[in-house]
Image (cartoon, rainbow, N blue to C red):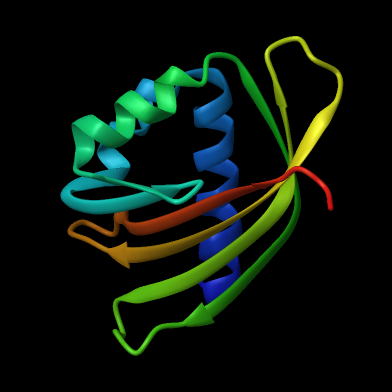
Length: 122
């Protein structure tokens, strides 16, 4: 599988799961995983899953997925842009997210790092 195919497949799974059952994202994080959400750093599986589930109902609409190799041959850098709808609000907020995806055991991947920002407009 190419880096682009891995990134696209991962992002489709990640955001569909985030929207439908965010607690099921637990296997994609490790105790060492870090997430920065709007400037606030969160570390570890439990804290990240708590933050993700706190959002309530979300709908992500992906616009672009860019991928680059990492200096670590087992990792990829992924940059995602799109929009998300919160709750039943029909107005979507633009977002961007950077993810460092690392190959684990048994052809699985985990999120080592994630940086997420909403774009409220300038």
